[in-house]
Image 1: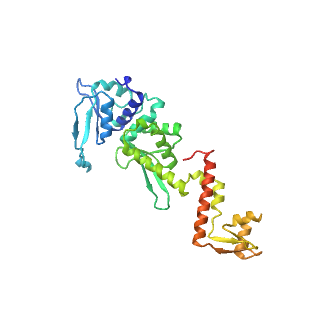
Image 2: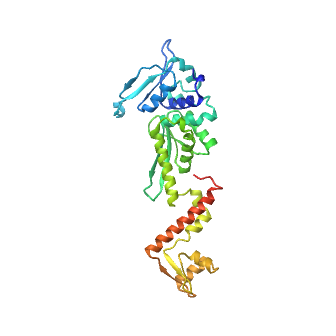
Length: 318
């Protein structure tokens, strides 16, 4: 049934149903089947437009009083005919969620499988950190099958160099695969969203785009760089020049940092700093004005941006 359809679309469907496919076990002579329920009209329309299904439309209000879940809008429901069952079984999803796995998905189609799985049981999120002017980001996949999550984890590690953890979700019969290093989150998003024609659920894509916008803006402002870059001695050398003082040489020349003054007079930075602090050998210092602090802050950010441009040519960025 599915062998006549584009493998990219099949991979997305299988990934989506691995998360949100509802298993309907066969009774007596009935064959096992899958159905799906979604409140996202984009996904519903994409599936019915790309896979042969009945034309009828059924909606439900997905309330679950026992779990305290009360839907605010209707969800679309569709059941796949039994002609799909053999293929779904081949791909490891024609079973209860806890028993699902990943089978027969080609490596080149895994980005589409992951995109479908993200749209069903995954989440990309980011937020402003409260401790400093930085952002944090995270990718989560929540699913009852550890076998399936472990296969996702292996692919992320081996193909995208993204480490992750799998932990139980509270007292629920589910597990959460997650990673939160901002470079890994960006690398994952770049991977699954690289084929723009394959994007189905725009609301999750918009979260990824807003994260990219934050990374770009903060990098340009000089308030966010990769950890590896900020741990480089070159970066430390620039940041280490920052000072709230103006350093004044014996002949009256003023410098915004001890390092710049030391370079101009072929002296050691720490020695010049000590002379200025102690008022020795004709050196002195004074506190910068607000205007001078602002100018020097721009100077430091400009130097860091120049260094980052050079550094990123030979290092992986995020």
